[in-house]
Image (cartoon, rainbow, N blue to C red):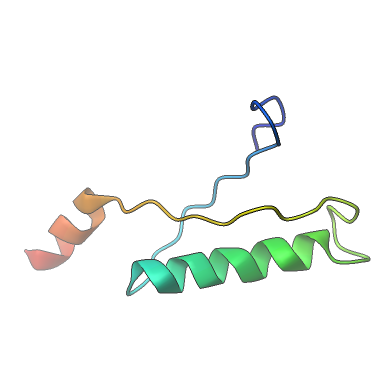
Length: 63
């Protein structure tokens, strides 16, 4: 969690998924649960979800 990031707090998640779209969907579900009423971060608003591809993780799967 980077609470002091410019603009809005940033939460980083490290996920393993079969595709980038799957990783983004999983991250969205986790974050939506966290900000939902009764969630650990209730009251926050989810602005955006993006996933970055880490090529090294895929390179290891090829060998």
